Amino acid sequence: MTSTVAGTEPGGAGALVGERTVWLAFTPLDTVFVRDGRSFDAGADTAARPVWPGPSTIAGAVKAAFGGDEPLEVRGPVLAERRPAGWKPYFPVPSDLVAPFNGTQTLRLHPSELPVETDLGGDLQWLTASGEAGKGKPVTGWMPGRQLADYLAGRLPRGRADVAALRRAEPEPVAVETRVGLARTPERTVRPGLLYQAPHLRLREGWALLAQCVVREDWDRKPVAVVALGGRGRRASVEVAEGVRWPDPPAATPGREAFPGGRVAVYVATPGLWPQGWRLPLPADVGVRLVAASAGEPEPVATASPAPEAGKWRASRMLRWAVPAGSVYLLRFPDAPSAARWALGTGDGERGVHGSAYGIERTDRLRTAGFGVLLTGVWT
Image 1 (spheres, rainbow, N blue to C red):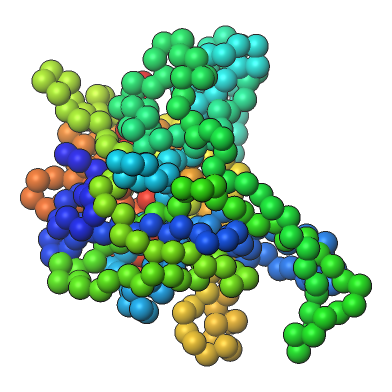
Image 2: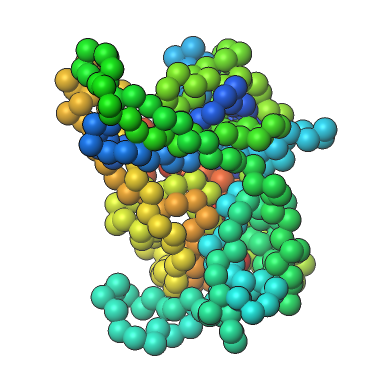
């Protein structure tokens, strides 16, 4: 079973009967500026706090691209590079890959008994690595989708793999540019002597942000050529991205199940907003448990009602904290078939979680904006 469908193919994983998916590519025409939603007073603060464009930012751009009409769901953003053969997606390196300070070996953390008592509850285990790797640091950067599929299938890293064997994006596809701004009064006039810094992000030539849109089968909207992306009037060109797909999940082979022993590794592809904070919501009544987790620093996410009235919009504003993309959760199901049903779905129309937003009700706008897209793999 494949993870998603390309371009405008109907049905498939990530889409229900009567739905299809289409990918859009947003190529910034200048820098990208997205604030993290925390309060900022240009008269008192000296630097604004930018963040990587999140699901709500890319969902807003998708809505603008379709002339104000909204798809059923948006999943993204996904960083991608334009190649002669098409778009090549990249993802944050999984947070459970580490490199020791005294060597070039890449290791994947594995669960073991906690050496101390904690107040986390349940029977969570400690993620560690053998030998001196515990004194190392996480491997960071952007990993191509095909290599992430190897990680999900348990083929990465291989034995004593070298850090250099990870085909990360080089050079770094995103550069930071610091701009200086002038504070303004409510009437939009300059406040003398009050300056602030505002770091902007610039994608290198040939790079873009992709978004997968789930639409109705009869959807006939065509995207416009240019839309606003982020703040400060920044804009991006828009085009349909053909042949894009999420990294494939593990596949069953003769004599081997897709998820041996019911073990499922969950990779967070877009920031997750879940009721219990960092804890991944678990499916009820199937006997699954959370074994271990490697979650990065929480990311601030500002949300608000789309109501056009200023008063309602301001009253609905909320700052929440999301689990960052690249985080990893290790789950244990009672058996391999129940793990495969949850991760990949069934052949009778039941959709699995791989390649779709998870943990929020389907009708919730935060889910339809693409928070919490998961990819599933194996662990040992």
